[in-house]
Image (cartoon, each protein chain N blue to C red):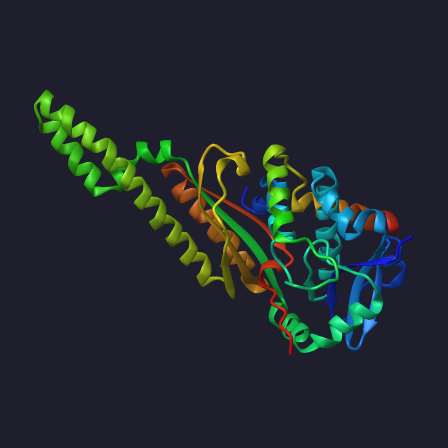
Length: 262
Length: 71
């Protein structure tokens, strides 16, 4: 029996027509001035115990997480909607109604805040091998030391080279930080709000290069074009130095919602 | 090459997807929610089985196809 309520998003403008929602198993509940997009789900999948079990099944999780984003994106095509976290479940309509009513001011504020905005994710990676090859161009200290090496006797050059190995590592760390900051500042200029996420290790990214920035930006729809052309510009500029830019979006603004009790 | 390169060339990994839908969003709502500890377990699972999923573009294309079919 489908007796649990799975919450996708809340909007304050009419969602797609009933039959369009119904064909996808969705229902729009109307509480006060809000349209609350939900689906009824079963204990078998979404009870506390079963949900916990299911989310460790990556295939199940992937399918349902995709569905979660797809439904919200679809509603957001024509509405401003607050996206809820995956697996937000209510036991009863009354419980959900109470939540909406208790937090109505904050829900309205959040809808207003994200109006006409999109979330974009930006990850910067550094290929340290490529950066290392360009280090004499990018670091004065490294190029100075290189000059000394060239001018030294073989014995001294040997020692200086060892010194340079350490210096290059430090200089690469420094450059990664300063490039990361530059990128962040550049995109912050074009955004309404920003957020920083944890840097993910290689085992998670499945990439050879190192993540140096993992940020998320709330971008006004009017600025999206600029945002994307900036990505292209920086991509071209810094790729040869080993910096790679990855962006995804538009996402529902998951990272920029904050519901507070009144 | 210049238009849509972002959508087209970038696979949204499952990690990226989960990063958004699990960690973010409204906090402390719902009678049943996935706790932080559960999320850590999920990440462990992802680490063991890193797979690429559809891009947002494909998501949208899939939706567009669906809309077309319905019309």
